[in-house]
Image 1 (cartoon, one colour):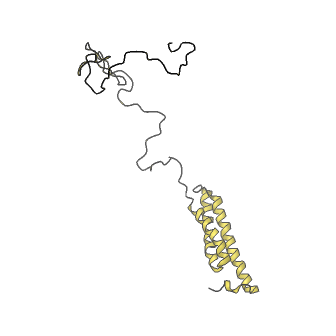
Image 2: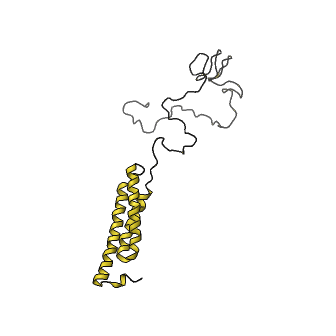
Image 3: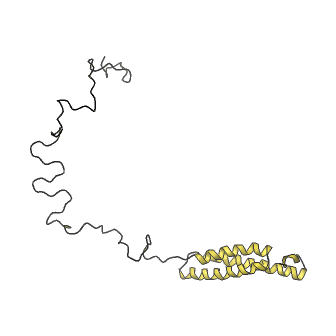
Length: 189
């Protein structure tokens, strides 16, 4: 029965198509007389003076090479939608026309303001210094945000509020210690 006949399993064992076995051929041996010798043109190679693939024929320029009279023969092609080349003083990756943001003042105001709150609880006299620094830095950060030089005006405002709370906690502790004599150990260094 031949493969493809009705009633035969196409995935089962198949009878050999050629009952005579082929002799072993060494893949690394010299080619036999059926193959061309070294230096002779193989199948598909030109034999009658034809140029090889990719070589210009009959004086025509190669593909993609400009010829006389074609537009763009003097300069290479430039994409009209490509961004301009970087300017000598411009850093890598900087977008032209965007002002550089400086959010440092608002960030430092928030950090120092948050630190002023626990310092106001445990170390009364120490809380005034970070509280005042947070308020000053926060107000400077807010003014930069209003001028468009920074983008974290809310962060600077949070630094002002946290600094004021730290100072307020310190003042409350001093009033409690002086007026009511509560926890006098807080004022002693």
